[in-house]
Length: 270
Image (cartoon, rainbow, N blue to C red; front, side, top):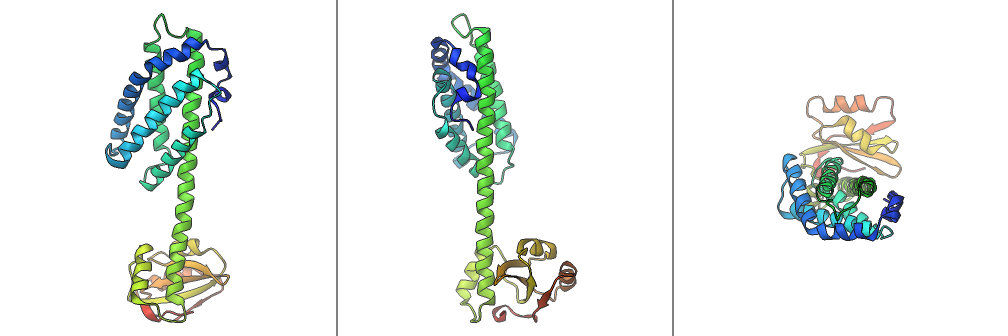
């Protein structure tokens, strides 16, 4: 996102000061209208308008409207704080299980309604038609920039979650394959954190390579894997389940691998 609105629309520098004052006078009404529009869009997406989502919605609308109004009046104004708010909203979108483009849709609808509101309230004392078109260019560029900041936040949260998940699985597998049997409480806590139902029996597979996540997904059936000592350590739950070992062998075809015996959960070792 640009650091200032004038970077998005250089024509703002030529607007008369009365344009910014006109928008400031409309701020309260603009907030209410856009909040109603965005709430309707979120309701159509089946999303909650209360609790954390409702608070985030209100914060996002107020921040965007205020930042845009003030930036039209002062085009060199730093937009970094606004970018930070929408980056955080993007992170929240990921945590709450929404699509990466859901917030962009809401922003687009909000920008269109801001434009409609400004045209409706232009009046004799408002911006001239040419000035309105400059504002439109700034507005839609501003909405795109906010959507970009939100997308960055979404992807950052997705990456961090993947790293956290990998760490959680690694902790669980390390407990399972360490030389000494883990305490039952520690094992249950690690399994709960990894959302891995504890099986009755397991088999440990050591595989040359570092593609732990890919191998676990290929084998399926609740298999988990991590890299320990420069090799993939893969844990197969309940290997006696029909077809599970056959699927593992198929996924590992052509790979150098060693399959350990099927043992009770607490007896898995490297």
